[in-house]
Length: 221
Image 1 (spheres, rainbow, N blue to C red):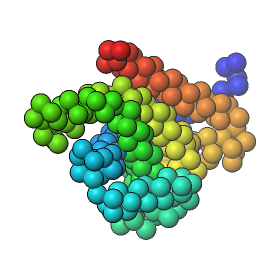
Image 2 (image 1 turned 180 degrees about the vertical axis):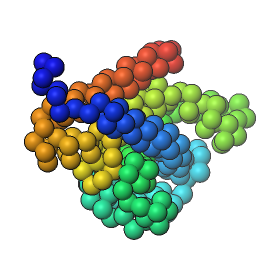
Image 3 (image 1 turned 30 degrees about the vertical axis):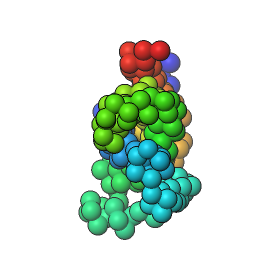
């Protein structure tokens, strides 16, 4: 078993793991904030009791659908000029962040919108009848009621982001995907591919466990 991992440079392994965690964490936080805003805007501008605006909803919905439909590997390539302009390079973990965020935020925004739609309309009408403003309805009624589904959505999105980071590695994004492709596949070192896969699975399992625990803690049903 030990001889199977003879090709591994453990310093490189931990550096690649750190890069994957870094990309997932930064992109995850940014996706949560941006996706929550997108989801709230989609819901609010399509809801009679809030800020219904069919034109705004249609445009935002179209933009979201376009970004959701672009395969991530193609999005990475399309965003190279933008990434280079704001980061100074299209290589490395930091350079992968714009594509990760643009790829995941629209997806999560839709999940937030769906979570908000599941909130009982009667609860919203009751809050309005008691004099709650539209903004109070959003942050005191809608978000708390939909919170378990919102957390579930970000858990699913974070798991997807881990997969995105692996794809980003193929085009120089760094992390475990980069290590598996360059050090493992291109150099025919199967032990590198195996350890990269196991570490990616470990990260996914940790995210899922934490997400499940949070959902159980906040779901009062």
